[in-house]
Length: 239
Image (cartoon, rainbow, N blue to C red; front, top):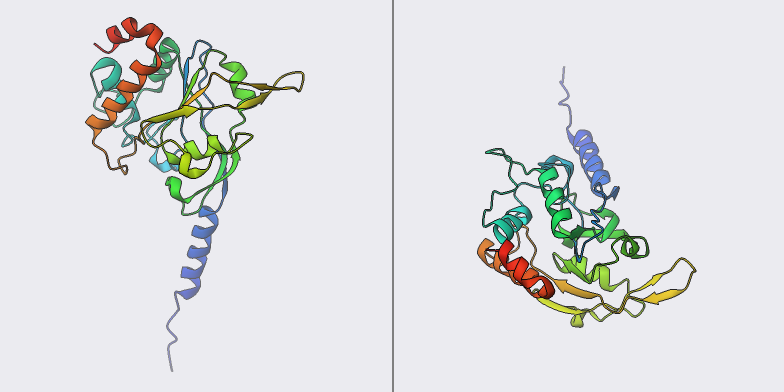
């Protein structure tokens, strides 16, 4: 009697299909914008990693993303300022309180997207629904500067302009440009927001090839430059 060896091909094909289906799933950004009414700057990234990489349910949730270490260094000279003891997570309430105190908003540029490869890489992120600035900007009327944390977020924002900017003219890291966004007012008339500036900062992902010290220097320079009218107070915060 010949014993037929079971094939694993069907199982492999099924697993591959499930993996592909998951990778091309439409996802909605899981975190609401943080919009302090006194905010003068607004941080704008893209999409968080998959939930299995989260260390907290808040913006930039991956413990190995250096965003909150950079803020800790910039404002408190302590990379672990927002860390919870020796645990591998940050304290979202402490971060939120800090943002409201300092007037820093955070709003993703992407509301819905598809991860083409199932990971957090911006390179393989297909943006389906961008941020609706007509809804966001009226909630932060004092914001004068939008700052992005990478090329993809910058591209998304520039594509929202009535006259999109050629990619060759997009600001490079640590560069800024005027951002003449027109938003829909309550009486359905378009209104220029002529005082907005778009500033591109380095990505805080460790995949971005720049040392932590240089990223800290870039963020510190940004805050000092953008908040000139509060320079003495900011210098006190930054030691």
